[in-house]
Amino acid sequence: MNAHMLSRDAARLRAVRQSLASIAPAQWHRVHDETGAFIETRGAMGELFVLARFDPLATVEEIDFACDAPDVVAFLLRLLDAAFAEVRRLKDVPAEPSRDASKDYAAECAMKCAEPAFRAFLGECHGLERPWSAERVAQRVRGLLGVTSRAELNHGGDAVERWKSLRDAFAAWRRAGR
Image (cartoon, rainbow, N blue to C red; front, side):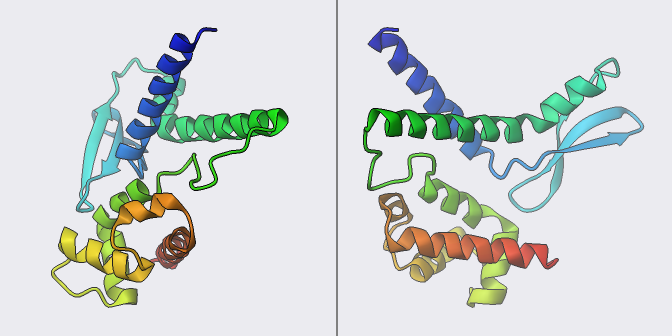
């Protein structure tokens, strides 16, 4: 395969990653009402909205395939990352030391900061005062992580570990039903 084709494939793969990140957390749910099946998700403020409706002739398999698309894409990207890492290992090519190539932590953090539940978590557990504006949330998170910009999360180091810890604490808080 030539270099031109590889670079086009790499650009497409990057676009797929960015597309998936832009819809995170992409928690789509299959729902039925009197008009049929549809995909429902939550908006930035926690409101429910219909993402897509299905024709009455759509099969269960087709509906499931559409509903599961974000999870399937994430799974395939993780599989590719593992395969690429193994190829690098076998070729004895070092991976980028300064960054986890499979994660854009700055984007992940920005998306979490937009979630109403994450804002509530920061208010309850980390003293974020109302109103929970985007700037106030970003400022609080930067303070908790010890960075001046969320972009620093993509440089590795202790800030990434602090972000992972904060993210895990948020997940535990949500599992506790808050």
